[in-house]
Image (cartoon, rainbow, N blue to C red; front, side, top):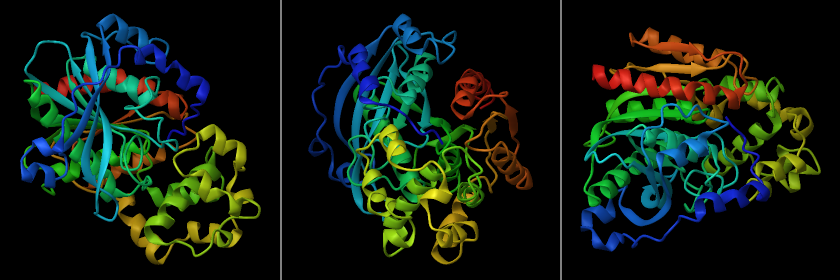
Length: 406
């Protein structure tokens, strides 16, 4: 659950890749059939975001991600498409679609699902230096197409981000795949049916949700899961939020405040901010989580601990949820409670202080009880953000192995 500390200073680095950005002729939804316009995944617009050689990709990754697996140059595009929000209402979302410059017409596809992001511009489609942009470049440089959705309410998408909502998460991810397929087809390329799904932190449970939706729930008529590789996710969300209430995790107050303000918009957890937040924070918390404040700005305005930010009465409700909160948490406690018919490898670092390793063990146990084949890989004594850098080269190899099997 990465809380990004991107600032204006870092965003200024956009010129590194921004210099190659060029507006591509917009793909208008009006140009498609009526059915395409009406359904999720219809492409609204496309803009080129980057065009890099293999050497340039390796240069971008250097210092963060092992670049030894880079094989090809890539072209990245900011794609806006139609989807639905947490209430099922029509909206638009954005994503980064990256295609390898390898000459292949039929491409394996990765869906990369990102971690906790509070600032709407700090996503793969918008920020050339975002961690998720780098991950997308890595996967594409191995010869795969990549769909990296910003989720609803982030990037150039409309409305607020329904943080952790399963319905909106699956919709944005699956509709993102549909839009990527449409765009690739218009460029003379075809995406293979089996999708390799991976995600970090918030994207870990999202990986399992999307895999289940594609396999069991008929979320799309074409795409099916090919392999699942979640990284450092909170697969027992009730336990994660309870730990945040008890200040057992790093940045507990910030995580819990993001969760509470988002879920209040969706499910009505409280009547007044004063019922939840201590003064003087009750007058400013909701405004800080509007998608237009960076993580650094939020951290500077709020206490890091839940005990200093929330009322004790409300913390007790998080520790022992009931009613609508308990009902809405249940699906997020069971994202691994099914039987994938594809290879699954769960990655986590034992040094993680944001999301404890026990969450991945919990996911692995749920899969085992359902008779699923899975691997649980400890990437070492690395913190939350460090765990994903360690996992990524392993994920590429895992996807290579899975493709041979499938």
